[in-house]
Amino acid sequence: MNLLNYHHHPLRKQNIEYFVHLVQITKVDKNISNSELELLHRIGRKLGFTDPEIETLIQSTAKSDYVPPYELSSRFEQVYEIVKMTLVDGTIDKNEMRLATGFAVRSGFKENEIPKLLSLLIRGVTEGKDEDDLFKEYKKEIKF
Image (cartoon, rainbow, N blue to C red):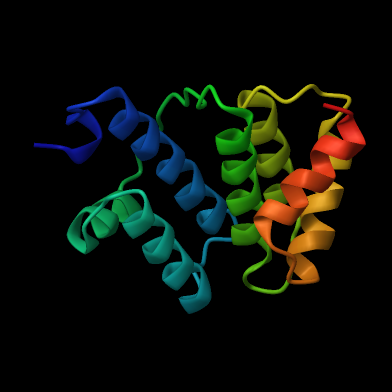
């Protein structure tokens, strides 16, 4: 049975769809680096996948519909991980930026906020800042 069609719980389905987007980010330059692969496995295990499931998802060419989490903090975390994935090889190209922007839109962030959000995340990831600190900074900038 195809892992992408096997969903016990809505959260698992959401995690699979999100992970597929992470994989798509790594494949945009046609080459998954070792650092990208390591980060995929780390995030995959955090999402509750086994290593064989992670490998199946990485090899999959399936596209999926993404349904973002309800909580802002969870959506922010996922965009943070997308940006982290784009930067893991040291560069972010225009296709990776386009995918990160599209993911932020699908995650429910307002289009006028996305440039600030991505700029904050790129700067923060590059400087090695903690995700929680970046989330607090984001909430201050957007004035929650």
